[in-house]
Length: 216
Image (cartoon, rainbow, N blue to C red; front, side):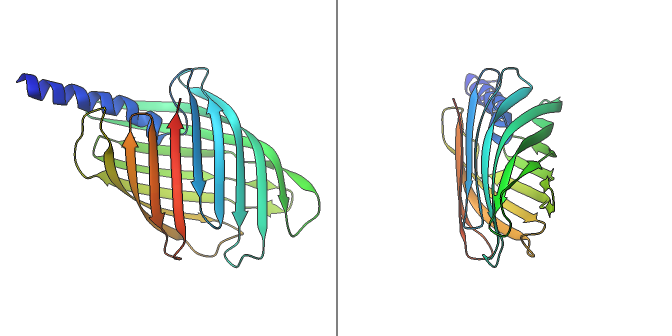
């Protein structure tokens, strides 16, 4: 193997080592992760800290609105994330995550606040060129059932070295029971660089989406 090919191989391995933190819901041990997902009907921001390589605790705020704009929810919660299982292969990785929270939810169609629990699972598979994931999460409170499901698939346009920006195409489908009667589909451009990514897209309802993640 030439020195040039060896450098490319080492760079690919370095990217793979970083990608789980970029694609998953927590960073590496003793890191902080901030993440946001912003659109007209769904706005979420959270920050968590990983005291171990498999656990993270944090806080989250989620605003949810129905498609017809008549009902809205605001959820503030404490969160816990756990890496349940990781499968490593020479050129790929798969992960199974638990994601959960407990907090207070208010709405414009009822008085006061209610306690909401939000347990869920995420599974993902990734290489330096391909990414797929699926997430299912329950949003349950007294009289409220806003269960959430999403699926993502994407590919990178070309290989890069570890310290370069890599562009990806991501297609996401998601739905929330009780607030939306449609499956929202959004094609997005993702730019990844070491400890962060940004995503921009427009969904099938002609609504702009902007997401970001940063590990520090």
